[in-house]
Image (cartoon, rainbow, N blue to C red):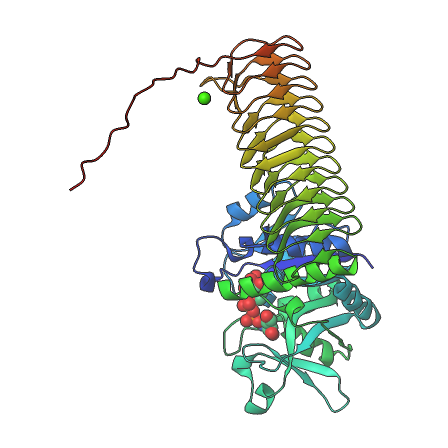
Length: 455
Ligand code: UD1
Ligand code: CA
């Protein structure tokens, strides 16, 4: 049976104390509802239906490149009412899977299990046991252990409140049942809401069996209501990713001190020290070592590269056996060849550095093309910007740039040329030449340094 997914996301999220709609708060740098949408796409090819109430324009803008069926719920009259708004978009002959936009860690494997159960009886319900079930709808079972009703906390008797099996809110129901039951829901209850959960009693009344499926962990069905819960789920999520990485053979110095905000792919024998942050799509080759406190975004790192402590790398490519850092900043559109050394306090932007070249200390290299086996001395600066335009610096193969050189772009230093320390290069240098533009050293003998009078 085809699967229609409805994601309920109309709640305001008052307890976040934020101007941002709750479901746009980010977990691993992705909006909460984005996680749910991605999980939905794992289980069905149909575009998900998202019910929103607050911050519609913000929501739509956040997903402008996604194909989503947006449904507005003007007033939040309850979960049953929310699903009711989607019915015009729900075909009769599908299975409807109801998800919550603020429950980000739900796994597609659990949903597949739930849907498989619902295929048999027509109604699958995801439940979980909680030590402290307060606030949740309780699962009421009969003598034969069949689910017959969900009672909301506010409507529950003391005996019902003692039940520790709760409703996660996630369910899979044949769509024609929803078309029949939802319009018939009443709001005659403690909260004056249309409860989606009353569909359970409606099913029981028609002798439709409800297949209960247990969630694989509490975390995967936990919703975010405040920032504390968001932070807790972030750690849970990160620990899940860290565990997967270790299972695939990655050495994590401390699995509780890594953050993956996107997709991290690792080769064999990768070692990652503490507090590394990976953003977007990052690929680490075989034998890569990532030092402590590195931030790496949308970057491909070749085999056996060593990233020493405190490097910040964004949208770059790093060739095999290169050594970067400590304290290096590699900015977008940088391509480093093999066995390149980028040392401490070096900033490198939109530049190509070819095999075997070194920029080891305190330099700024921008808009440059550096050949093979070039040595760029300490404190070298490319003066790439004239206040209006950026210009290019070209250092051909085997060039040697002495320390404290300024390369005023556009400028080309020819193959094998040498630039003496302290030179300001303002014109192209021919191959194999030596250029120096240094003031000649003067010696003044008999000069005394000013001194403070002693008291
Ligand atoms: C609901 C269930 C409860 C379950 C709990 C799990 C009902 C009546 N109760 O509780 O049994 O234990 O979830 O968290 O279904 N929403 C809308 N529109 C609305 C109301 C809610 O879109 O009018 C969305 C919210 O944004 C949220 C989800 O539905 O994503 C659940 O709403 P919430 O108010 O958190 O749950 P309860 O109704 O208290
Ligand atoms: Ca100088």
